[in-house]
Length: 139
Image (tube, rainbow, N blue to C red; front, side, top):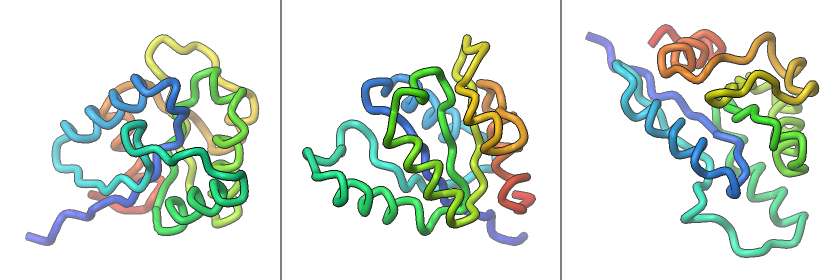
């Protein structure tokens, strides 16, 4: 039996909305027949206050090696310049971007509607299937 692919992912998030980030990690951890490596930095390991250029470089280092960027697409994304930077940098590298609508979100920022075809809902199976499809790996 061939080895299972390990997906290299970056999860774009705002540390002040850490609950959605942690829930997404739980979803991915519990997914059947799915392995991943998380290149994003969670709240408990966040950077000390960095000057903007250093912060940009840190984010670039996290995004460069990944296969896909997951964006928690709640309305708070519209207020984060850093999340927009991550989206723009991922686009510049032609990385697929997967907007994920957090539970209960009916709307997400307009600029994300054009980041990729469609956002996925807040279900493990939808998220995992979209990661597999958009990265071109069957699993």
